[in-house]
Length: 116
Image (cartoon, rainbow, N blue to C red; front, side, top):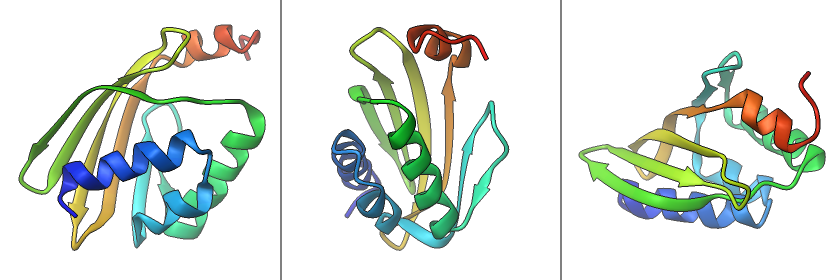
């Protein structure tokens, strides 16, 4: 898969809340860094992160733009409640090696009825 196709598969798995399918898209030594948190390293830790997140709240990713540049895919997204963000995915050998995400944590917490 191209980086763009891989990120589309990522969006599909994310919207199904399928942590196992998501984890399968990452290299064994991948890093997922959502900038308001410490980086998560390794496929198993990334799977565990998604399992925790999906258990805590419903999340939907609606792609607004999806670009590809060499080994990188860039996703601009929103959710049904208006939260917006973007993600950068470095894809090597058909797997995500590195992901960095930017989104507004305060807006997310307010949507969930919490500011902690």
